[in-house]
Image (cartoon, rainbow, N blue to C red; front, side, top):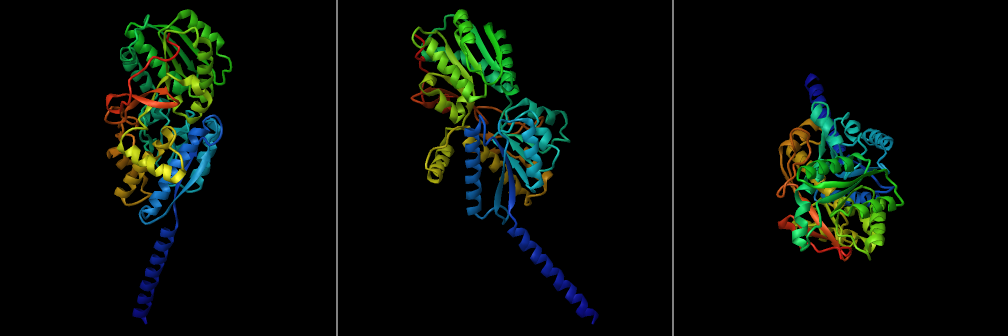
Length: 409
């Protein structure tokens, strides 16, 4: 009888184990996705959503992850308000997600929201405010990864390469004067201030340095200052596509006929699909910089799959960035062999380069942001012509030379 009892217990244990394993295999792995699905950045949010949906569809079609299907839980962070980010974070974690991935959900609180949990958090916020807590307290925020450079990097890159543009354009700047128009938002103001520090050391003079709030409807007063100062370089640092489009439309209305002997540079914002819709022909000749999202054989192959899935081309960096973040996490989980061993997954992400669609991802050990570089995560310079973004640098991505914008007479 004793042998039969022991045998029965063993059989029962095996059956329970098989049942538990089968139940786990049937339970999907949840991905949390906080994104701006409404509000001024909704066109970017739409691309983020489509990128993750296609990534999950393709991964599931290939057998899922560790034998399990993947499923996305979306959360709308609207206009990036801190209270919305906190609420969305609580809801996603409460739903049992095993990773949080976004293009951006920044508001300066993101690391502190998701860093209080154990699941990996991958974001493309490009904000020192998001990576500074990691650098200051790596034991607390070990799970937070920014798969792009910090905002100040735009200032560094702009100061290094903006002054190479005139020679390639065949245009001689009349002076070394610069106008800086920035919004009072960390992502933009930190980049603009770093740019100012560096260009002044090079001997350039900032003759206009204006800080605004979001939602400027009338740019006339600032354009008057630009007209009086006559700078050779007008730089605009404002994430809101509506603000940026209004600026360009009013700029062209003012200087399109009379002319202004200056080039115009923007940080990231023309990457947002809505900008092109709003600015239209006023954007022709504008120079801007963001990630290298539209170049290379991997991107071309990805674009074909995107068009087959959605019937239109990907629009902007957010159609690709979240997909690479997804790949970074997938690679780490596959190497770890488990989806809930969060510290091991984060260790593998930290220590393992990832060859993505738009760059080679290697994280700084100090703050877990991506290391920039032409052969790592490059800054891609563009000029808008014919309603399209034309890559103008670095050299290996270049598709055309710079041309004088229509307001330079």
